[in-house]
Length: 206
Image (tube, rainbow, N blue to C red; front, side, top):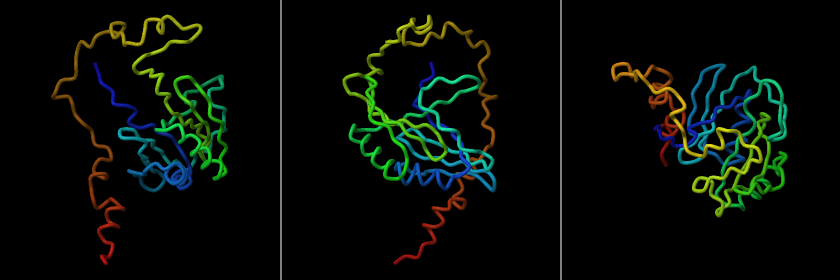
């Protein structure tokens, strides 16, 4: 069974990386830890937690999406509704609400969802964001809850994976076939391409 470590990164899109960095790094406080790209294409990573990143592609032709209230049903092709960022303390919700409103962004009141308390907002790209504090006495990881009034058959089977419903792997990839194809790895591993490293190394010493 595959063991997952979390969401490595959630990749979103923007036409304005400058405004996106100002919001996610400078207003929300996420570290900007990685950047790839060239003229007309950029891919930046912000650190959300010990294991998780929020990533943005900058594509010049992208337009901000219309703001849609979080969780409101839609029709037609649709995949992404909102992203929820976990916070450590309940007080962080009011801290973020105050910072967002001071910067001119709408922020909801704090909402009780039973296992989390949340506020809602939007980033400069129209992306719907939720900030959630986990209620300590309601831990869904330890004690899963199915409180849906009309759950489907698969949901009623319980929280644990049932791999037997899918065909077993009959021909696993051999060691000889397990190849890693080149992407942008050389750029990340090359200190000469690191603008922050170069700036630090060439900075005059006092």
